[in-house]
Image (tube, rainbow, N blue to C red):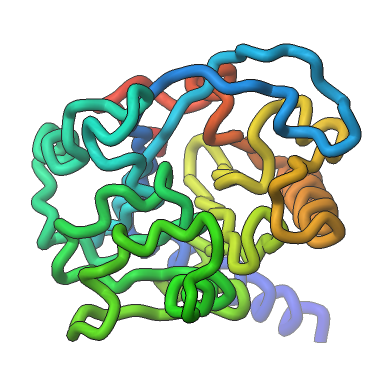
Length: 267
């Protein structure tokens, strides 16, 4: 009996190792989509911060899963604000030898313009957006702060949209998970990428904007829902603890170096 159990355990372990070995290559690349400054005082509704001018960065990301590509957040439209880069996202992708039409998914953390300014080129992609945000974009009138113009190519057209009301296992193998983290906006999302060498990485979206928000559960006064914001921050903290994950706060330049410099990728 014991021998049989050992054989079964060995078979299960070998099967798991075989499945892991067959997992497609997974990489994560950060693209610089702008830089500037912001008034940190805006990001605490309990007057937690006093600095009127702190560095603020805008990041886009590319996930390569085998032969498939996913873009996470697309930054401002080039030249639309002083903080926007003048180099289109498509030019950066070209340096990675990726064509916009090859991108299978475009996931966005939320509907604000600094995350959705360059959605148009991804003609073949499925847009993965939180349902609360998609509803807000399509409401009459649209929800305040929604970058409706950025979504015009997906509204009432044949492009593919998947409004998400729960977490999504993007490629079906647990390596790339969109996490439901409402609060900043009604449909806000974060992203978990489980890299083989670096380990799990969480891209925060705007669940938090600075280290200070994350450490002290700081909530901006302009967020959609305060209680949901705090719950989402606590969820990210628990995932970070349980998976020993690296959290990357997308707007905080102190986190840029957590990933290799473009065009290198984390694996």
